[in-house]
Length: 83
Image (cartoon, rainbow, N blue to C red):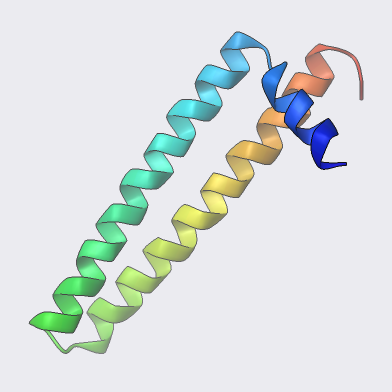
């Protein structure tokens, strides 16, 4: 099963792979921003509001990353008429 997923990832359409790559980079930037906010909370500001902003941004980046991966595979399957 894992081999099939890796083969599908290697055989992605170039445009789909490019969109997935940019999307994952965007999610990584959001994740770094959230870690910076959480470190700021930890070292300087002890406001629960800042903590919840950092935590929600981290969750958002993970959700967006998973959605980019799943939607990339689905769009590639639709393009190749496998689905």
